[in-house]
Image 1 (cartoon, rainbow, N blue to C red):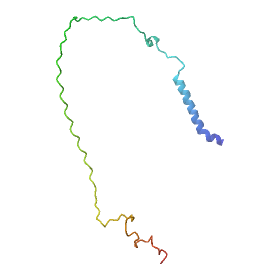
Image 2 (cartoon, helix red, strand yellow):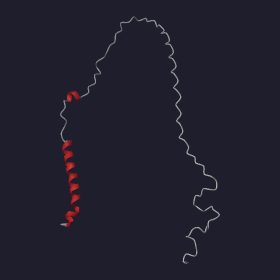
Image 3 (spheres, one colour):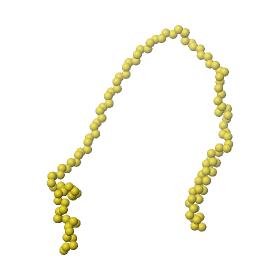
Image 4 (cartoon, rainbow, N blue to C red):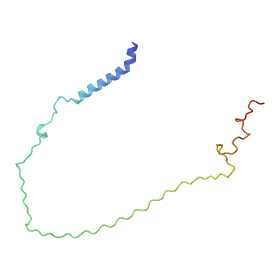
Length: 125
């Protein structure tokens, strides 16, 4: 019984997949021929029919040159794109000597006495 509960979702999914496959094959109905009129679907080539074109124009025609069309006016140039304004720069100068970044890797006074974490007298009262 615990095995059936364990595989129940998998069996349900496989059952639904089989149901979709059967329904698809029923809807496809590939076993029957289509019910259309064969005369409308048949292509016949009429090679025996010849078309004769008779002209009503006189045999001598004079070619009259057509006047050249006027040249098209040049399109107006597109206006220059408006430049995008630059965002303002927020520049804050720091005064020399008063700013400390607290990284202490480039400071000369790395062993200051005002901090307690590197003192050797941690157990002295």
